[in-house]
Each structure stands twice: as structure tokens, then as C-alpha cells.
Length: 158
Image (cartoon, rainbow, N blue to C red; front, top):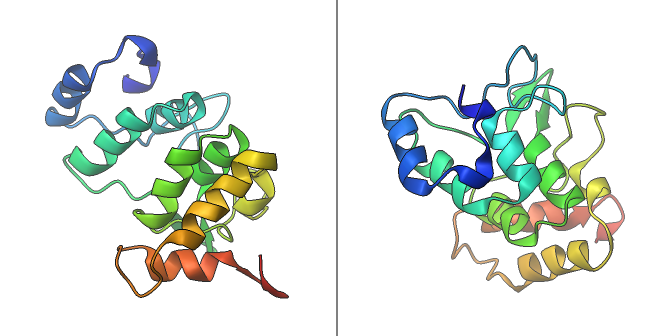
């Protein structure tokens, strides 16, 4: 039901009421993906698509049960919402997912199985990489080590 609420009309107070009553922001209506998909988006998918960082962050940090933004399946790690954030040029949201939520640029999109980095484009993607590179890689943030690892490619550094 939460996925069907128009996000532009959803305030943080209203979302908190939904979360307090146990709403699950990760499930899409009639979808196999843990975050829904373009045809049956979960609330998190929809908010990520629209760049509603405030709602995504609140849902992840204040939900009754943990809301990880990546998952493992078939010995691969997937972060489809990171791919959406990168494709839609939502820089702040993508950086937060990487530095604070443990998503990596090398995690896969669950629809096509491509690395999330392939969804980034132009100046917005360059800004994401630049912000990650500025992080103190000595571990000052929870995702710093993962961020550093995600910047590396097979040939060295991005």
C-alpha cells in the first residue's frame, strides 16, 4: 500500500506513522525483486527514482525492521536502488548509499545484471566519484573501506 501513495504528497510525519505500524517500504506489488521494479515499484524504488532522499533515508533508518539497500543472491551482490540513483543523477542519494549503506559501484543491478557503475553518466557520476574519493579512507565513515574498494576496477583505479 505504501508504494501506491503519491510521494510528492508524503511528508516525513506521515511516513513515520506508516513505519510505526510496520509498513515495509521494500516490497513492490506483485514483483519478484526485493525492491520492486519499474512496473511494480516498491516505495523505496519509487522514492529513489524521484530523488526523495529524505524519504529513502527515513525509511532505511527508522523502519521497524532493518532495510538493507543491497542483497546477496546466487553468490552475487545486488544494489538495484544504487543503479537507479546513478541513472537518475541523484548524486547525494548515491553517495549516501555508498558511504553509509555499504552499496558499491561494482554491485549489480538486478534487472540486467550489470555493475551499478555502468548506470552513472557524465558530470553527475563524476561528482559521485569525486565525493567518494574525498572521503578519508582510513575508516572515518562506516562505508569508507567499501567505498574505496568500489572505486577500484580490474585495471587499477577508476
